[in-house]
Image 1 (cartoon, helix red, strand yellow):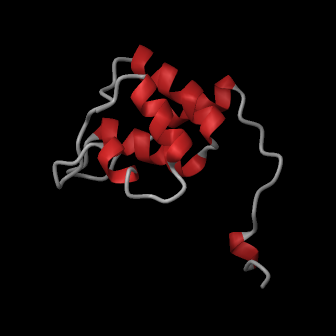
Image 2 (cartoon, rainbow, N blue to C red; image 1 turned 180 degrees about the vertical axis):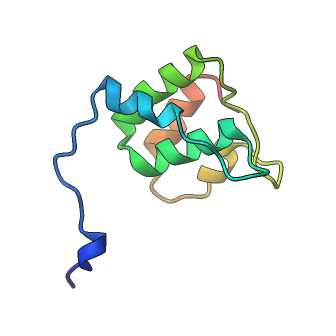
Image 3 (cartoon, one colour; image 1 turned 60 degrees about the horizontal axis):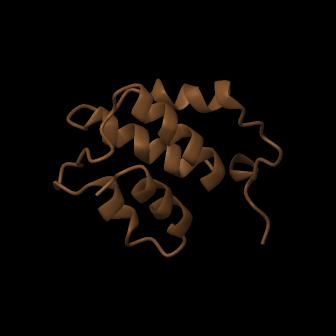
Length: 98
């Protein structure tokens, strides 16, 4: 089955440090924790290797790895329910997420 034109897979996108750093600039929807939102955006938009680099930048900028969503769950708790999140979970735990 072919992907719809607007859902075409992007191959070869460059994720250098400058590109990764842009993920610290997203504004959250009203009522959403900025720290949680940034983690979620990075997780959804990066491969695990780039996510590790993002986490280093995220922590250096003073953001909270244990920020919670509106249900009071940490990001680590939420992605713990995802089948293919092992590398992301490991990266978060290595950086001190609970």
